Structures are given as C-alpha cells and as structure tokens.
Length: 114
Image (cartoon, rainbow, N blue to C red):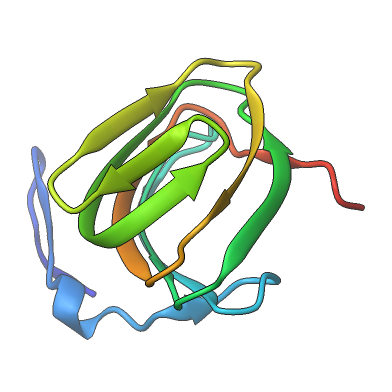
C-alpha cells in the first residue's frame, strides 16, 4: 500500500500489504518492489516445515532473515543473519521453524520442479 509518492521516493506501509500465497505450500510473500528488468524486493514468510523446491538463481539473490531460520544444503541462516547467492547457483531451501526473510533479487528464480 503506497502511503506517499514523490518524484524521488515511494513510501510503503508494509503492515497494510497483504501476504499473497505462492504455489508452494506454507510460503507467502509481500511484494515491495519490482521493475521491468525483473529486479524485485520482497518479504517472504515460510511456515514451519515449508520448502522451496530446487531452483536456480538467475541473478544474485540477497536474503536477510528477520525471524526464524532459512536452511539449505550449505547451512542455516538465522534471524539477524544475511546470505547472498551467486547467479547460477542451484539449491533447495526450507524453514524448520518458520521464518520471515527480506529478499532482494536481480532476476526471478527459475524453479526446476516443473
């Protein structure tokens, strides 16, 4: 929900943006920014036990965990931790105890579960 927009800035009231379902059970998101090139910033919420299937990072992905933990084959990222993934990297991600993550993407992920 845009609260204020000027020629230089756009202010959002994130608390008024609805959590949108994704095609992955237990995973919802709030889209904060997106442009025509595919760049995106979003809040991602994963319920305990939720999983993102195997996917490729087309561009760099940056994740800051606000709550809970986000886990993959390389390790765990807990509240207050930051992880970034190189373009071309492939992995699965899951959240044993649930999490909220601020994600910044250069390009949308390519999911390989189709």
